[in-house]
Image 1 (spheres, rainbow, N blue to C red):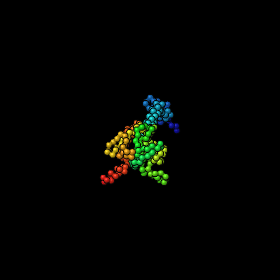
Image 2: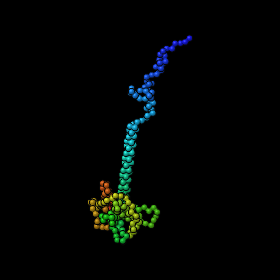
Image 3: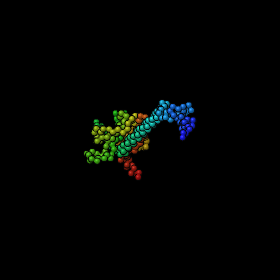
Image 4: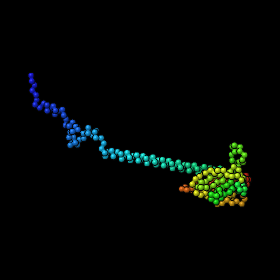
Length: 247
């Protein structure tokens, strides 16, 4: 028995099977006319040139900010380290001066030329002469060397450095190699406190074995504010007797 075919059957099936939405999403459809973008076309095309340029610009800005931040951090660390090293150098210099002056003794010595030098000798003659020269006690002799427990000490300002120089022997000997304590030193100004408690600009005692009671040192360095250091000088025999009598 033959079945009659609906005259619109095939076209109805095709109409039901296809959706207008699918037509819009096809690569060759007219989705662009209705404001839709083909998914397959977007996947094939990728990013546009403008999007890549914007992304590269943002990445470059972030990289530049990171490099700038790292550079500032390294510079700050270097400045902090330099400041800490400078403070440590000032403390070492102050410790050396305090240790020497705190154990100074009124001992007259002889120079390399054989001339007599007072117990405490202070100069302001530039780099040709030391700014201070005296004898200190308490020099440790751990190796039992044939030398006294006293040590002649000099402080110099040469070539922008504050130097400490010592002597193996008290009389007529040549000095050892100096040790640098501070760099970038421009001037060193000294004042001395006498037995009456007055500060003197120069130390010119009436007797060669007299010692000051205290020493004030003002160190000026390039690019830094002046540093004022004050040190007590060990009392001499007469001062010790006065102190014992007063007690």
